[in-house]
Length: 123
Image (cartoon, rainbow, N blue to C red; front, side, top):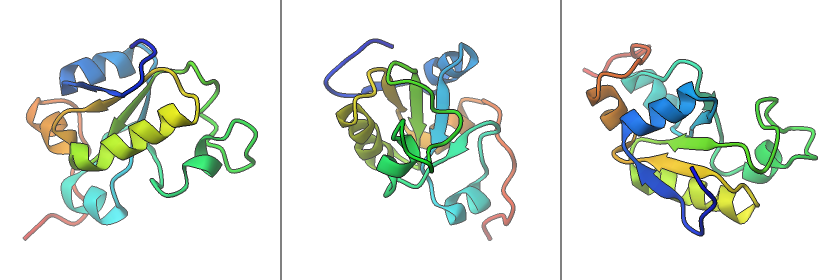
């Protein structure tokens, strides 16, 4: 992952390899989406509407996993329509190595990557 003006769209397999290599995986789906469809173990749940607090390096509400502007970050949502604005927002805030997952969580799951089962399966 290299610095860029727009966040790269990567396959779930490339995203998982980045995470295995130390990238921070953030999940910006709603609690309902995670409960109904499953979650990715180890992903940090982020409120897409509170990026300044959750990613501001000087913010008291910053996630402890966030440690520098050059930290590799992988964003996953239910689709790229949800992850793209968050990934773009992180780039605008100075994070240099941000990508998002093509096809979102459904593609991650379809690729056979590790997921936690839904809390309340869809009926």
